Length: 197
Image (cartoon, rainbow, N blue to C red; front, top):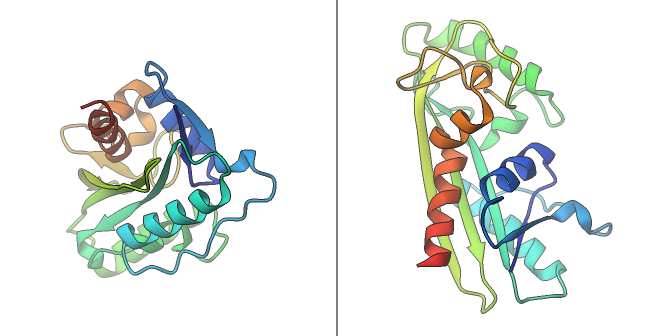
């Protein structure tokens, strides 16, 4: 069965394909539909934004005998009262690059809370099935924000995020190591367990 991802983010698609490569499910991407345009993410939570994405893509797909996954994820920093949160991809501006978001994070943390560097990644999945049944799955990855970016793997805030129990940033981990502990890896595995149980 196909699982469609309601995202145009190539990095997220690659991660999901890696996570599902040994299953009977085929990961399809919204970018395969030339006419599809991502909806405005104006929800007030990860759940709300994930649902907006899932409903938008579900309506655009002609074959309804599939699952559609809306996924919204981001970084919540304790010393910044949970920011950047749902605005993680746009923290430094609407079309900000990862490096710009990372630079702003380091600057804001230095100004507001240089001592408290606790943070967590959060992944929220809302999946809509063939009979319009809905599943909601959320998963965290706890850690700390480093002082300077390190590593060239991953994306987003990975060069700054040091997972709990590690001395390396997420960007310094091998893909298999990251999938094992990441918020997206945990959420994807729980989703797969629900599909196969």
